[in-house]
Image 1 (tube, rainbow over the protein chains, first blue to last red):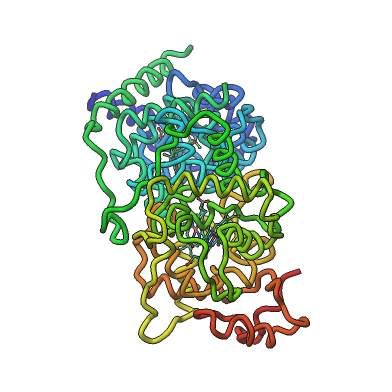
Image 2 (tube, chains in turn red, blue):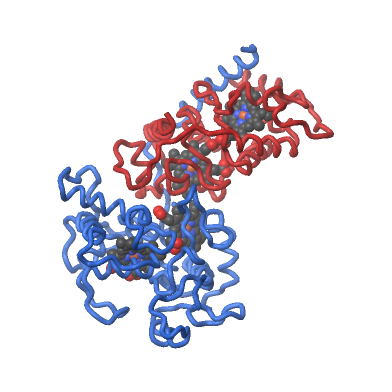
Length: 211
Length: 305
């Protein structure tokens, strides 16, 4: 595992230099470049930007532009670690990542079933989402991520419209401390207080809201 | 599919699998929270024990009004708040004025209106002031449903006995008094990410998710939260959300004072449009507050709009 991880980092990073001028974001999205380290986003995030659930590649379509640029710069700085995305983020220029984010934010996002805290909560996933686990200082997920987990502003990303695989992988990155890009550990302490069963259940719950 | 991409996909699946293996399936660690887990607390009944009958449905309606007040009792709400914004965990959380701590303590005398108040009158008060709205009639469906929800949460609680965790805790005032400049700095660092740089809150669609702390959509000058001492107690044990108990008492006071040094909807009891007369009658002996005081050259209490 260790060897393949390093091999990949090497393939993907290389010694790339920043391009002198910005390129059409649509072109980077579907064809990659201008820097060879920038693989077309659509290969992994889908032509519609809705991600590839089985592989755990997230949807980017409809995410707030400022959230997207923050994630790219967090991959770059390493506060969000990921062997696939980090080299791509490092190869993207500041201007290109901003232009891409603006374009992605405008792409249509999936429809989501409306649920609020007024709904009855059954099963561990829904209970965490709509009731929290306050004996462990875990607020309702929707208290920060909005009703149906549709996201709030640029800081609190949508959970619905993402796959269970991706949501689960992110909760685990916080538990392993490879993702520590949230202000004041607001999300980290929650992820670390969840059990494995809860991680599964709550990820499935939010994924199912857009089915 | 290009081989490199296929390899990457496989790699990501493998690394996700590894990720789950690394995490030990241990019991969740307890987050430290000095204000909680002291005395044994009353525990309200679990949601799944709610009976599926007419009573259960009334309780559910009360719960729905409590967590989504605008949607379910709109004619009585005049701001962007929900009851649960100040009574966390949907009215269950100790040290957040839980409904189980309140229900069994009424009828009770209140200095605020100088009479013995029924539980219905107490609920009406929160609509008039905290929700900056109109009190629902005592025999209305809204009051019946909220009363049923409170009654059910208090199942098994002794009548007329003050339970630990009722109301918000009282915390000592800073030795040198509160400091608005310190409060402002704490606000910018620890609160504005959710409540907005100007206390304006944040919405998802048309509804607030992070409630406004001041301004036209917040609680009015007659609400209990306008007292700095009350707000400090709430903030110390409940904010930042999910990290209650992490601010010191002094910090909670400074930031509570900063929050309450801004304009908000006027006191509905305002006498003849005069802040000074209203201050003398209703605010002079109501805890620590800035109503009618001059802050940054402006007298507070005129109201928004």
